[in-house]
Length: 404
Image 1 (cartoon, rainbow, N blue to C red):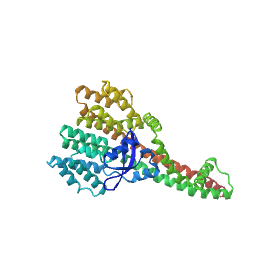
Image 2: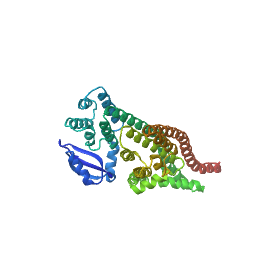
Image 3: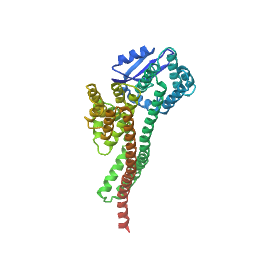
Image 4: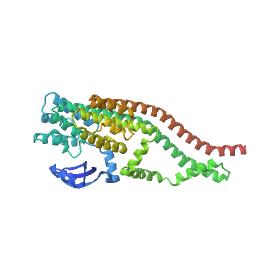
């Protein structure tokens, strides 16, 4: 199935925008009509265009990240205190300040009062809640433990947010360092160096080869500063290119083969997979269904393909650990823990322990990489700046010495 974006009008005349997984655009339109919406536009999410990409960058989902965790925890608490489901949703309707959140909660409550299950009501909210979320809620309803399931789901979402936050926080300082020093280097090369180039040209002195190279680069940057405007457009193009399945698969395979970043990506993706799969299995979701849902949390296409092949092997009676081991890409420690879980009949618990282990190793690896990355970046950029300054000042020093 592919991911489609859509625009539709609901019964109240409001314009709804979102994304939905479906086999075709026709299926997206049919599902929207079944939910009482009038489809206006459907297209592949990857064909959203640069305008849609920028809107998506600054416009978050109504329920995403911390807001989804808060909603889930509060709903679990209200249900645990003995409140009926529709009453709990009515109470939560007064919590958010965002109008879109309020509208979604109101729609879910109205659907529940109309006789729908919570999972069906959540699923009808035009992609506001993920397949993972909806299927876990459905499993909790079938097992008669909705409150416990929501609490586990909140814990899962919180852990996922924590892991994502660690990755982002680890990259903030190197990104700022690169941005600031890079801007200073561009100013040096694009403005200061051309001034020296004009001076040396007027003096008509012989320059060392390395000085000539630096001056040429500076003059190029000064003359073609427009490249700084074109660069963001090029990055957007590369982002669109990255979404191409063939290109993305090759890039993901190349990253996994890298000595430093490859094991880190594999551990990070394995932690996501084990956490998701273990949580789903513990809540009673069948293995094959859980694998189909867990596949969507993997960002690496190659690992996702290995998981899909593993699902086919499991249909034929093979174990999860053996099936995943065939691709030779998942960490051996995680596979061994899965095997122990299968042999002891506690695969769900062992998957959660494997997720904890992989997250811990990922955190330690990121800390070590960050500790080495920042000095390396600083040293490289300082060396570049030093080379530029020396290249510009050496002829001036030689000239001054000759005059003296």
